[in-house]
Amino acid sequence: MNNKERKDHIPDRHVLEFEGLIDALFQCCQERMQYQSERFGLPDAELRCLLQFQNERYLTAKALAGRLNVAKSRVTKIVDGLLRRKLVERTDDPEDCRVKLLKLTAGGDGLAREILSFRREMHQGVLNQFSLEQRVWLLNGLSQLKRSLESVRELLV
Amino acid sequence: MNNKERKDHIPDRHVLEFEGLIDALFQCCQERMQYQSERFGLPDAELRCLLQFQNERYLTAKALAGRLNVAKSRVTKIVDGLLRRKLVERTDDPEDCRVKLLKLTAGGDGLAREILSFRREMHQGVLNQFSLEQRVWLLNGLSQLKRSLESVRELLV
DNA sequence: TCTTTATTGTTCATACTATGAACTTTAACC
DNA sequence: GGTTAAAGTTCATAGTATGAACAATAAAGA
Image 1 (cartoon, each protein chain N blue to C red):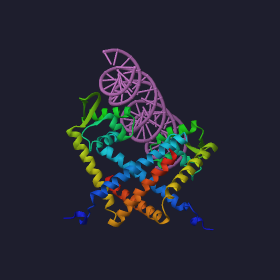
Image 2: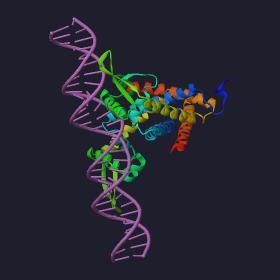
Image 3: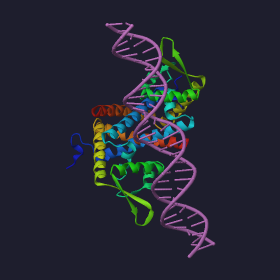
Image 4: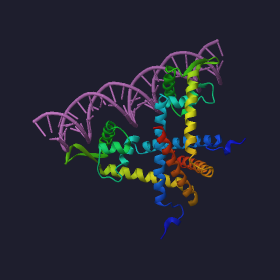
């Protein structure tokens, strides 16, 4: 009997291949972040924090915690690092003394741009190895994969 | 002029979409690992270590360092945790007193099987949301993506 | 107005991930 | 036998992350 045809059954070969690919892709991403971190001389968390200012001139600690998916006490630490490096500045919100407004310094803005353009080039390099048609398929596949992962994750949490 | 047709040029829209998808997928993987870690009551590094014994009855600290991509001093720490939890045992290699052979205890083996089958089910759940045809496309796309990421990474290092 | 309640951000204790240098023990190679 | 190499451990250091306790301030109610 060939159980390839059974409902809801996926050949082991496919699952194994999928697991291997996901693991490899995940590892690639991790290595890329480590590389980025070394290249720009900034711990990964601070680097990610810096990029949050891409479309936002001012951010509060709370907003950063939400965007970075970390506890607010973590944000304090990360921002401390960025302040020490003079990549961000902190000012009191004139409308509410509890909140501190963070914004990039000129140096921080320059560095953020550098990082962004590095990432852009790298991603372009990756996509360049696909033909237009393949690229469209890939983006569709990844987008479906994302939805699928998220829906399976919902079942767990 | 439409630069979609220019050689080596990829529409910004595609790059942005790609960046977003990669980030989201990466985050999903991270969250999955955290969930796994909590579910099985084991720090992530120890959990990953446990799974290395899947096809290997005995492993040395050095071999584990290679498989896990960490320094050997890190392995000492990870194995300490697994020993404390009685998930692995350590014996001296009769042929070379310097090396310690690690192997799973019955409990460790049972836990490893549990983790493996949990992962298997989850991945099956994800793939189940694809038709056979889509699945094949996805696997091909991911595999090409992996090659592409790896080749771009080579240029950096 | 005065009091309670909620919010913002900091500090601190804790835990996990990871590295590299220094060191011990043992094996291997002249 | 003496040097060199390899396997593992220990320790100092750094980064990632959380949650509880806390101070300051704002907002809402009585």
